[in-house]
Length: 417
Image 1 (cartoon, helix red, strand yellow):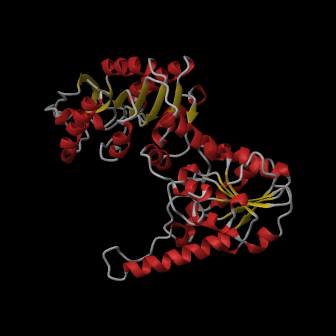
Image 2: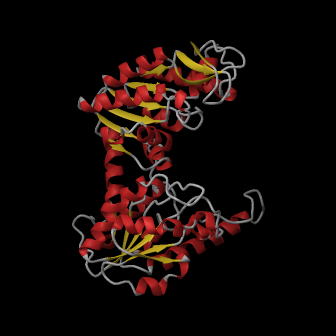
Image 3: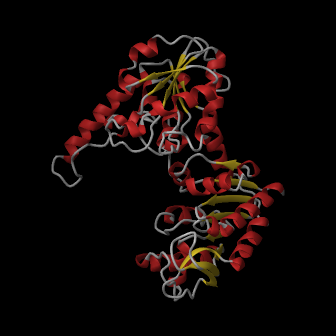
């Protein structure tokens, strides 16, 4: 595997996989350009060296079909402005041969959405897994995926993967394409390197106490991470909607709060495992309950174990906020994934804000703090605190799978693992 910092791109065409799956408003305007800004060091390094740039990305889930709603043409001008140079646009990523060949040093080309082609994701189209012909269709699609990746690779001399957000997917552009470059001509971009280092810091370079904060609505979506972290953390804070599954599992009454009734035994098992492993499991004790799922709902503070019928917990209560903050402030390694409440509603941000403030305070006192997962990142951005934590990850699913201990195909393909 080559190293981007020491590699000289002069006179070379670089095919760079980025994650420009940025949020757009109804008029196609970018509402958060974090991912574009995150890729700039890699893209500018290539151009400044005198290389030419072929940028590829996905946007949304067009399911293998052309859909103007997900066209990367909408972000071309923003990318050009961020790079400080003109960016050409290829209207079909699979037929950009001539445009790629004509690129001169210092020039850039943006390819249309990779996922307009089903070969990118490599999933058979129009056939269910239960159908008798599914295995044959899957085999055929894998062959098509390989050909698609080979064609993308033909555009360039070098492949750079700087899309951590999709590193957990074995897609044509994130993993398969790397097979068509030798070890000296494929590498991780700066953003990817930073992400890998941040995850390594959290999992393998731990300063104690180590506190993980897991939020979100469902225990079931976080079980793999929780189980992997049990052997690493000193404190495990579980918050957000999953609070009420744990409360009900212990005999509490949760009113209309979100609750996975089929996961009550799982919640009790997690509590038992934490006790056996000596992990301090911290759960919410009170909450801000609302009489409707609305920013303007009536509210009351009540015990997380005794929420009245017709009411639902939408945020952590004051006692819980202080309890969480006390644990976080005394930590030296912090991982935060998932908010403490429905932070999208301004009247239910207090729990997430308390966590964010405590993470910032601990960071100022020398802790390493990694914030990851879309909602947590949105939280720190909403509060204007992204620059006051150690690292904000651009990867949602990729970060979670890395924390679970899974091998990420996009990284393994570069490293030759």
